[in-house]
Image 1 (cartoon, rainbow, N blue to C red):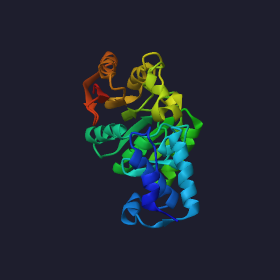
Image 2 (image 1 turned 90 degrees about the vertical axis):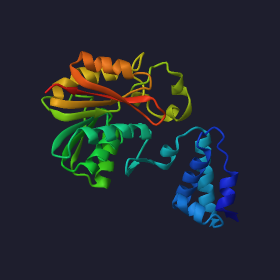
Image 3 (image 1 turned 60 degrees about the vertical axis):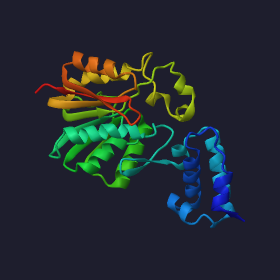
Image 4 (image 1 turned 120 degrees about the horizontal axis):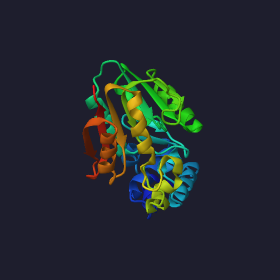
Length: 276
């Protein structure tokens, strides 16, 4: 017989920076229980089937596969989202975009565009907070569009429309009060691409040219044609790209420029406003 506490003590994930958390998440999933159950009932006996499942999960995690892909879900804002290897895993720092959008745009009716939606994380977080907003979420990857739509349907958020588009290509003559995006922004030769969880994530959602700015340049250059007067553009970017992104925004007619720091103290998002 094996009990919960013994399984957790024996779990070894030496290459993970969140070893204990990973083990608890994987065991809770194998048991079909919450993490709080593990702490409340540490002496409960684990079935051989659940122990086998847990062992298989641990083997995948030791090979470097992200916990979110193993479990098929990831929490973001107030939602648990389905995730899959053809989409980027939503990260806590991206919630900065959601916070900024909610601060800048009133809760009254507005048209909002989420570019490169992936799992739909940003669009769905905003939709849940602002039912008066009409949100369009686009992605160029067909599997991501289908995944975001499944998340939308499960969360029953009717004020979101998920569509296929590579940035603005399918959005001719459409205009918005707010455009928001977490685009690819990693340089092609960045050593982080061959380490950690990002090894398993799609390069198309991570890499953007030699300096990581190719997609940001495209979005910033094309956004003014799709923003209503006084509209905002909010962008996530790399920890060392804030100044470059603000300069791009300035060069394309945006004002009220600012950048905001993530919890690690890195400037993680930048934003600007089109003149009224």
